[in-house]
Image 1 (cartoon, one colour):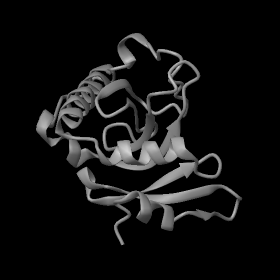
Image 2 (image 1 turned 90 degrees about the vertical axis):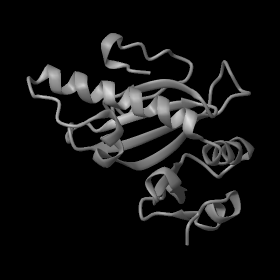
Image 3 (image 1 turned 180 degrees about the horizontal axis):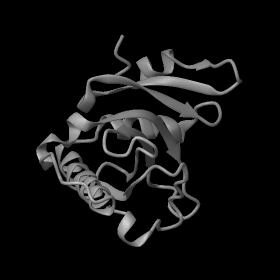
Length: 161
């Protein structure tokens, strides 16, 4: 089953062996089901985030492609390796693994979706995206496990958003 609607995502809700609540959500761009980590019982905000996620379009993915490729270039440059792929090939070298919804104290009307990805060029850290609503990149960088929509994650050259 592809959990590609709110109802189908809700049908996949479960508690894992450690007591964490999770679900599956279909990531159409990558044609795969991804783990949705949930901090608590799903509420109206989480349901809004699911609907926002399913509304992500090509405009956002163009921005994510450019920012992800810039991260790829900067990482290879920092370790002295040559650039081996073109921007258009970036999706072949990364895979989303986990999605998490973050709320903002300062902007309760917006949705914030945090995505953890594995990537070929940075096996140890992977990549992290933080997306506001359907079109605004807040953070694209090595995965650090922390994303706060109330704090501009301006890590100078390591934030490619």
